Length: 70
Image 1 (cartoon, one colour):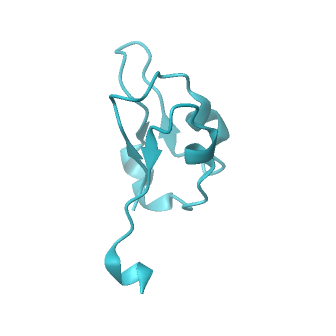
Image 2 (tube, helix red, strand yellow):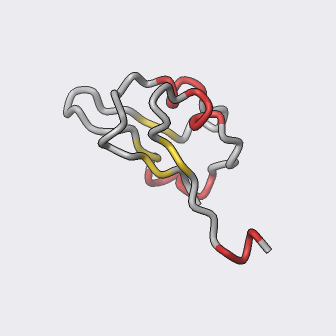
């Protein structure tokens, strides 16, 4: 599962995009949108947590399916 971005907390700083080692995140500052996973690469997320760690506002979480937690 790709990261989940919470618009209400995001300040659109781009730190998550900068720190993603898989280069799957994008930030559209022109349209003032929250960072997002590039659609064609959504299954390429390594779940490393770099984006979550680098976010100064705790605006990124991961939702893992139950079968992966057992």
